[in-house]
Image (cartoon, rainbow, N blue to C red; front, top):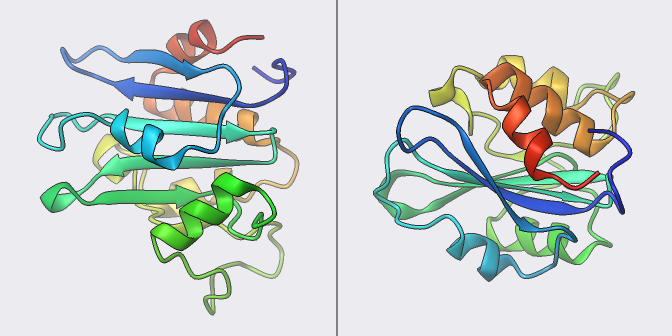
Length: 162
């Protein structure tokens, strides 16, 4: 998946019949957070779908409904505030950029938000953190690694423009 077009895209990932489905929302990930939130669909859907946005291969965002219809958010690097989408996600979901312990001194980037966003799918925070903070991977490569762990790598590769 590395080397995709401009490196920006958004997808909606769901599993309505036990099989992963990945739908391309935008080949050039925009900065319209409300549009991405609406793409989540009905908060009562199960299993819970999620939206993944890779912005300029520098960082990614995951949005997913949580209890009571609230949106859970994860950003791979909350310090990317110069990018519109990153700034909106950090502000809207109250993600603290300078949380004590938010990063390990050996890590690059500062993941923020809900690192347990994939826990129900079998990828808890302790296993997600090393992927999100890997300094030798671009954001799209990190998302590809997550997709491989969760089992939708082929569907993601087929949906995202190269």
